[in-house]
Length: 314
Image (cartoon, rainbow, N blue to C red):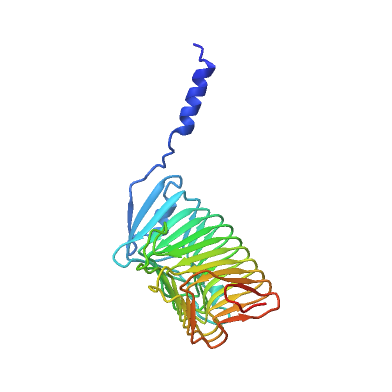
């Protein structure tokens, strides 16, 4: 039987316009005092959409690689804890392990406490990682992303009391933080909190960081950006404290970095904003304000520093 060219074209067109469905596996449950979370993840079919409900403390180093759609949901205060956290100031980071390492995957972690070693979580190799209502209360560093990956931190997430960096973006990666994944929030909705760390947020090497209604407070440094990094730091209302009460500078730009600022910058021990070589800061919001910073509101720390809307830099 011959099939006409018109019939072939019709079938091909139909296949192209039909929606693509991801296979959904039945949710799994892990009680970490009885079963290994790493073992359960290792048995999943990576091409399917998988959900694991977790209870208890999973004291193991989790590696997630090549998963198309994996969601880990904590129940009743569940946690994942790195197997080694060494707080020695000389060799501690080298000796510590990573609680959750995500590689080339789409992963959501929700309602979990993640206790780090050298890192609570790493998102690498073009991964897409979402952290929703997650608490990271210990370890050297919180969450970092690199290799053109995307990191989303939403809801009531708290990243606090780390010896190193709270949130970091490297090698042309993308970080978004706010109350809601789709920016579907009102001025009364507060986003995540980053406080009590050495550096609250570190962005470099062509990476992008945006925050909405996020509080970055009580760190040694609030936000540090270098080497062609871009910051967009916004508040929709005074529901969040902005960048405040950090021991040194609130925001520090250097090496061809750019910042769009629309938040209060108050009570920092150093400059409110420090603008270094070939860097630019832009005042974009009515909610931008300064008070009680130990240094300048905006410090043009190099002859090539530029500002728009502050009227300080040459």
